[in-house]
Image (cartoon, rainbow, N blue to C red; front, side):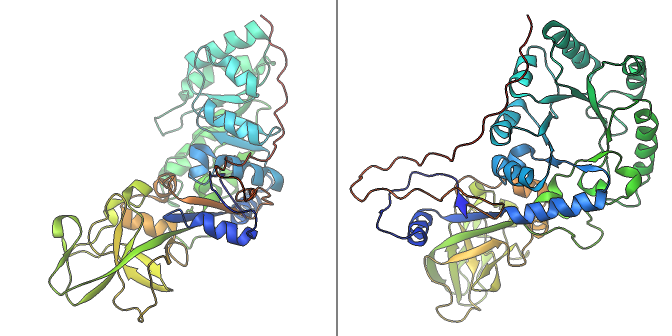
Length: 426
């Protein structure tokens, strides 16, 4: 089990377990990422999509779970292709995994070619201007690192139109084109019976078949479960890897990945008729015991999870029992009604569960009025982050000599540097 390195003074005389407990005591919350669960989810998706290759979308810091840690774990498990959103995301992932193919969904801009070459990653090109600029760079430098072509089949967001894609087919048939993938993106894959799915499939199948010899990819997380016709040569799951349900019309086939706990900072009693929180929107209907928790909307626990006198909000797990939020979520704190717990079941310093123990990302998203994607990518940076599984070997923090007064952050474990790209010709 490991966490991100922190500047944590600690005694070299303590055990690893005591050091970890001392380190976590300085944080209001602890976010644990189960890398083994991410690997299991990837393998389930891979098995569902056989014989297609199963890549992994790890943009937005692997949906808030830690792109470098997730990339290393999935690469060890056999994942050979990753998708990110920006070149800077690609740079971080490349430092963690030297060998896999990395595609950058954000596309190509003039003067970014050298950056792609430096870290040996590939742009996803969705515009004829991008394609022309990429061509100029490749001709000028001799770079042969490859690129994907994104074709719009109905999203109307990014991608060449079908007519534009058709116009570049002669270039593909001429050979030596440098296109390593042709892809599109599904609009409503989570809706099994949406007619848009069949329409997009027909459009993509028709145009992809003309990209002779170029692998094709259409399916996102939900698209994987639409069946073999949607899987082509590669699938690109993202949110499903991190426990979000890709089949919302059925039970979630994925394992939960995130466990999120926060600390009780105070226990207090309020009388019947007293209000709690900003605006006084929640009123105690009986003598009430509250636990005040060190988490708020600054930590990604949305204000929409609040409760008032007419609406029940989200719940958290306290001492194994679900307890409701009382009043408004504030920036750093929430109040929880623990009146029905046994005496002394919850005390100052105890941890409560915000995600985990049956509270899923999708359930929390419902209370937040959003989707699981936004819940994950909004998780704050004030939590201690712990990674378990995935052959993690980084220590929580290195023990320091007892005499040291000012402890420096432990150095991260050594990583293999990416291979140098071919020399660029001026």
